[in-house]
Amino acid sequence: MTKPEGQRLGKVEFITLMAMMFATIAFSIDAMLPALPSIADEIAPGGVAQAALVMTFFVIGMGLGTFVTGPLSDAIGRKPIVYLGLAVYALGAVLSWIAPTLELMLAARVLQGLGAAGPRVVSAAIVRDLYSGRAMASILSLTMMVFLLVPAIAPLLGKIIMDAAGWRAIFPAFLIFAVLLLLWFGIRVNETLPQDKRRPLRWPLMKDAVRQMFAHRTVRLSIYVQTLMLMILFSILTMVQPIFEKSFDRADSFPLWFGAIALASGVSSLLNAAIVGRFGMRRLVTWALTAQVIISTVFVLWMMSDMPGLFWFYIFWQWGVMFQGGLTVANLNAIAMEPMGHIAGMAASVIGAVSTVLGAALASPVGLMFDGTPLPLVATVLIACLIASILMQMMRRAEQAIA
View 1 (cartoon, rainbow, N blue to C red):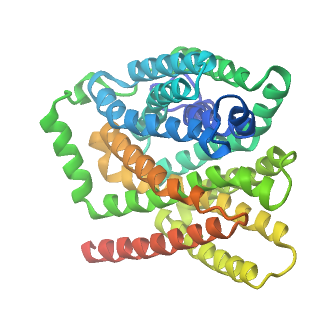
View 2 (view 1 turned 90 degrees about the vertical axis):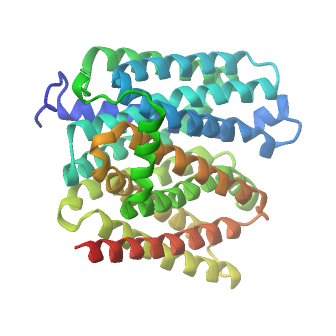
């Protein structure tokens, strides 16, 4: 594989590094899953639901940070924002580590999320700086493949750290990750945004960039669909541990099951990278959503009929949901970014912020619907995929009208 133009690192290393920048978020969320019961016992008297706020507040901070990191990177360059973001992330990890109360820990997690927005948004902008079209979608798919392997191992890694040194030791692991990523990125990546292509950080320019994005029907619809896909992801993260514990009495083996399921995303991302050039981004997203509507409908009917083998059907269903993620998220991001190459940083910020914040907000009530069975989660995924399928058809018709 050839090197990206003007870069020291080869394509394989480039994809891996971009994936690790994406994975800052996945690692910071999924490694906490096994620790929720321990956090509840020690500093969250409201139970596991209250302890799960350590993930929710991180996502909130990340969403808020996403609004500013893209415009800043468009104004002063990509590398300074990655440095700043990782520094803030590391500070948030340290403060979370030593926080004596849940309230202080949640504040520190917001700070950690703010910092994580830097590498997350800028990595997407860097990919857009160097690639376009289906080549960009392929690169993003390979990046997502590596990135989505992190949820497969993060809960197990979190449990190993927790068993060895207690749940608070997970936060120093975040700090070490940030330091290593900072050194790797700083040494190996050259600035990808030339001085003459930077946009001054001015409110009228930012407002105009947002107007351009939401005036573009394809971009707007892609953001809505991506929001629904992230809502599904956040809903699963909120409910997966209680489902394994309460519905199936498999709390001890949960990290292993979750890891095996999460591998589906990596497999589908690899498949997507191989076939997106042939079939196109929109078609693959539509196929994945249609398949999920069918599978989720069958699962809802299965549960309502009280059929046997519920656990194994649930494993198959969740594997399918994660497989769908690898065929949708990267493609939707590429669809939205493609017309916005002239404002890539701002576009990455708006796409990431809107889809993340709205996705988390829509997912928040889902956890409250848990009734001891997977039914509320499966029904949520079914409805989200139905709406997303309709939006993709609207996108297709709009593009046909333009053509």
